[in-house]
Length: 225
Image (cartoon, rainbow, N blue to C red; front, side, top):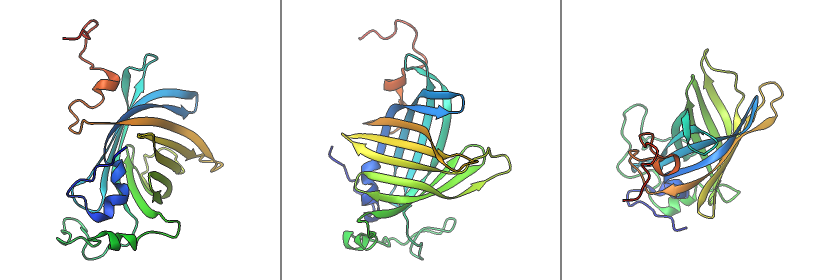
C-alpha cells in the first residue's frame, strides 16, 4: 500500500504518516456480561502542519446483520513524537510555534530515533466521563504499541486502571487490539479489537455510509439507478 505524504507535513510526523486519513471497519468488544459484541468504528487521523496528529474515533454498536444499532462512544486526542517541548514549539495556550519547525529535516528527526530503531510517542486521549489518558509507547514502521503512562480522572469517572493498545498496518488495513487492566488484580484483560480499511471520505458527511447504510433509507431504497 503506497503511503501519501501531504505536502505540508512537518518532518517530525513522517513516522506517523501511514496513519493519516479515515479508516472504517468492524470489530468485537468484550466486557462484563458480554463477549464478542460486534461494533463498527470510524477513525480519523489528521494534521495541519504542526508536529502532532489529531485523532478521533467514533464507535457504534451493530445488530446481528452488521447494521448500525446505536452510538457507542467517541474518543479524541493528539498523537506526537515523545520529546521535550522547547521554545520553538506551540504553546502554552495560543503561543505560536516558530515558522521553522524545531525538527526541520530528516536528519534532525533521525536524532529522535530510539535504541530499538523506532520512535517514542505520546498519545493524549480523552474519553467521556471525565477521563483523560497519556499513553506512552513506540512506533516502529507500521506498528504502534501504547500503554497508559498516567491519567486524569474526575470524581464522576468509573473505576479504570489503564490499558495497553496495539496498532498495525496489515495488508493495507489498520488492525488494533485493546487490553484493559483489571481494577483489582491489575492483570490485562481483552477489551476490544478491530480491522479497519482506509476510505476516501474526509469530510464526515458520509462517514460510515458504506459500512452502516443510511439511517434515512427505507426498505427497497437500495435499487441501483
